[in-house]
Length: 237
Length: 225
Image 1 (cartoon, each protein chain N blue to C red):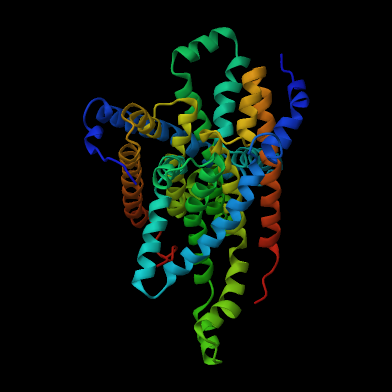
Image 2: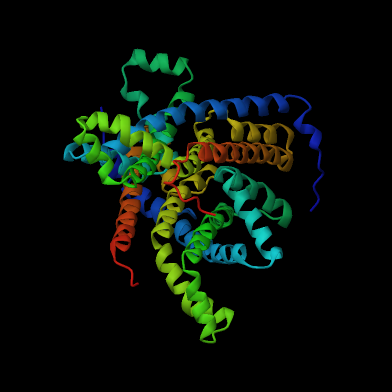
């Protein structure tokens, strides 16, 4: 191998700024998509367990359709496919306000909402049925029982799988480079294009992703201990 | 405004070329997904076994391998292989080789974790009993542990296969003509993004959903105690 390493390309010129901008965009798009995914996931995950068939059917079709199609296809669909169907004025507005970012965020959030839904549903189903029955017996409505009893317990049960799903979301935000969102992987490619130093650029991007993922996992391990329900969770070794 | 005729007139290209890879380009989603699943699983078995090995020289590298690839986006791994292999071998590699290598290396980390969890789900007493009746370590693994472990792994394995199947769409980023790329090519000519991307979404869905139905049947089947 006849490769001349030149690590200084990472901090000379524009590269450092690009990496930082990419990191910020990755965090922004992931954070916004995560909020959307959590909201959709909690809503549809809860609806999939309610004793009312039409709600279950609606939530199930959302989950099955969105999580069974590649994220890349959803990115193209929301970015290229949907805007032309909107009224002209809205189209112009969207394309003047960073359409690729919003389409990417939306695709990421809706896709991971469907995956998050599965996590939350399994959390709810792990709660003994008697909790729900006791809530109803005490006079809570179904909605109150979910809001005050079932969902809070489920959220505490699912911290570990929800963490790994959130990290998947963060890593999958890299797919947004296909619709030219200038996130971390995009900027890594850009450095490679400008400096022709592929190994250095890719190393920088890879290390940043690793640090993000390992860091978040470490924080969430503490959160998990903090929110574990005493006596309910047998912590696996 | 919507015109689904574009699907009919390009059906052959999308399905024969994009999905099966039997057209003029070296492409095809299935031609990439099937070997990637098979080879990724085989490599994953070795990684899963290595993680459980008593020797640190085996378990530590395997653990690092898994933790590394689970902390990095697949897109990044594809770019690594795309840039590095031609540098190392000093010859151009077709997109198919790049994509297949990247998927096998990346997914093996996930398959490895499934294999490890499956083996750990077999009760310790089974191994002790096998040793007590005189089986060697390899025999215990082959006749006692693996048959039970694989049964426990099936649902997670099928889920991972679905994930891999969907991930093959990312090969289109480096120009591999799979179903997604085929839709892009047609769209560049016809400018019907809504119809085309919705259509390939449905094609992907048909495959992944039937795989997940199949997995669910396995979950329900009672396992012999």
